[in-house]
Image (cartoon, rainbow, N blue to C red):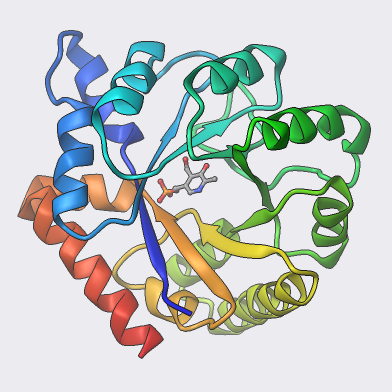
Length: 245
Ligand code: PXP
């Protein structure tokens, strides 16, 4: 199975919004990502619009050729927006206003009744629904019971363990992700992964054969400051390809 790279462009908008105006433009970033070998573009329209805006989603929908993966909270407002723009995929994420980023996975098991109509309506509109969950068999079973075709495994805890230099914890969390990818595939789910991935930690994740797609944002946009966006994405792409080979 080949491994796709989804480039998350949220933080191009973060930099733009620091001053208002139009620069740097997330749509241009998406076009550069496409030229650098990205397979998809991911953007998170948060409730507080702290980075990506409604106008960005409209512009991305109209102007980019790659599939758009809209990350969204499980709210009626976001459902209306998704049904209006009809992205290729919608990744349902938990969202709390006070968090700096999406700090944990969705509680698909605990929120079954809230999520079920949302997953169904997105699916009926032929939007590929993904649930951003912890690599946990309980959450995988819940995602499967909800009828979501895709899960994205949260790699944040693994990324933190690598930063902390804690080899045992890193190995344990990597095993958990491997096992979740295996179980997810066995259940017939398409398995994605993402959060906190960098040049230093991507290879063990990319090497997991059951994973079909990685979504990577913050590190690539940060690295672009030093090397440019296209070289940063090309390097990530080649590390992923090396690991998969
Ligand atoms: N996948 C999902 C579902 C996310 O919410 C995020 C962060 O917005 C990412 C991937 C990308 O994480 P990072 O910006 O740390 O690479």
